[in-house]
Amino acid sequence: ERQVEPQRDPAGRREEQGSGGEEAKRRSGVGPQGSGEVLLTVEGASLAFGGVAALADVSLEIPVSGIRAVIGPNGAGKTTLLNALSGFYAPDTGSIRLNGTPVAGRPPYTIARLGVSRTFQTAQVFGELTVLENVAVGVAGPRLGSVLAALAGAPWTRRAEEAIQRQALSLLVAGGLAEWAARPADALPAGLRRRLEIVRALATAPRLLLLDEPAAGLSPAEIAELDAYLIRLKTTGGPSVVLVEHHMDLVMAVSEHITVLDYGRVIASGTPDAVRANPAVIEAYLGAAA
Figure 1 (cartoon, rainbow, N blue to C red):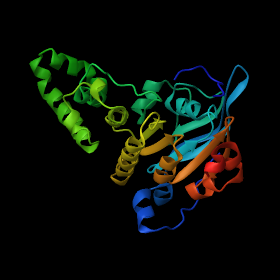
Figure 2 (figure 1 turned 135 degrees about the vertical axis):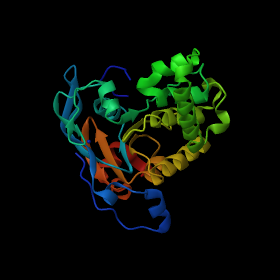
Figure 3 (figure 1 turned 90 degrees about the vertical axis):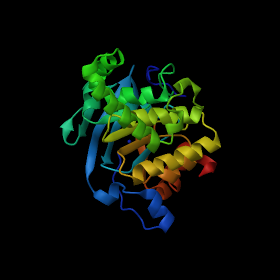
Figure 4 (figure 1 turned 120 degrees about the vertical axis):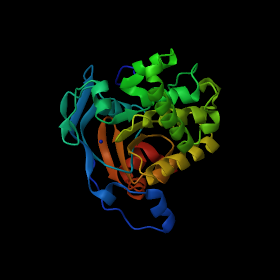
């Protein structure tokens, strides 16, 4: 991978959505063209590490619903973009606005409180906690101190803890993980551990969910399950999603709009069919697989 940033872990315009069959309509859910409302706007964002551009004049709009994918070669700036959107990096120039509020340079916890949640390339779960406890931590958020007091036996917090447990279990049911609720998170297969991380990210009731390569390391069967889960998420009123992913079958199946980065620059942005046929994208990334 072309590394242009520390190991810590783009100008897109909305296009009219073409008509398709019933299956395409079912899978698309309510996409950016469905509502016309913009949740997050990036304008001219640039960021360099040691003089090497990780993002170069990136602009895009994220709608209030649906799934937008961001793809590109390794080192293209995809994770850097997610880090900028979630507050881990501040762009050197340009702006990022969430519902009109400037958020570029704000710390991650502030952006999280404004409704942005994310996952990382490596699934980050609390392995020693149960699956239910992992999600309860996400539900608790700022109330975590009260939850810990409840676990220690403080009776005045029991009611709050029970409400959090009920909400966490409801999220596990929706995510297909209820049968694993009492098991340690470390006992989950890789695909379910990835899904647990997504469910926990959803526990904060975000308006924007950033997914960084959620299919990495998964088997074909696990990727198919992830595909179905993401489709279900967006067709049942889930948050707007920005999906960074290398598995093109998954990207093409779940996304209404795709933005392609190469060396930190946007080289294409459009519907899956338009991007798949774009000569610049084929040359830089898709190759013969297109």
